[in-house]
Image (cartoon, rainbow, N blue to C red):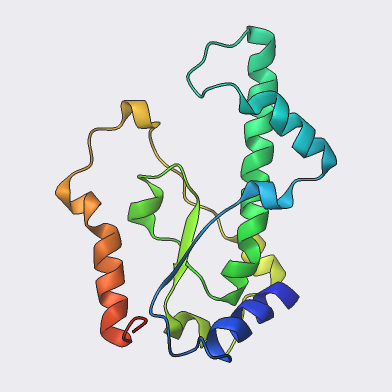
Amino acid sequence: GVAANALRLLFCSTALQDRWSVIVYHADAQAQFDAVDKEYHKLWRGRGRDSPEEEADLAAVQKWKKRCDYLAEFDLRPFLRAGFQQVPELAQDSTWMQIFAVPSFLQASSMMTHDEAVSVPFLRMLLPPSKRPPPSNWEQCQTAKICKASLQQKQPFS
């Protein structure tokens, strides 16, 4: 709970408290890498997502992707505990795992427990980018709508 408490204190009990209206955080699996992960990342980093891979490598690549997903989720847990939430419409149209908060989310009286945060399923993109239709105007406007709604609660930085 230390990280979740620190996030709440940073955004709600410091000079920042009245100077923001929306926060978006993108998961960073690399922030959780240990020494072995860093070496493995160097090995796979040079390969493009669509590069052909030998069949023997395919299982290793899938295992590595699962590890990175796990570490990205691990990176997001303190933010969930503090009150951040995922936007379903954005999650389905993005390869990034991202969450957001508005002041009222972080000012709630209680935080999630660790067990509650671990049980929250992260939404994933439904189709890979190569198979998705081009984004509609509605999809392109989702981020703007979220920001606009939060701005109605508070004024942004001046």
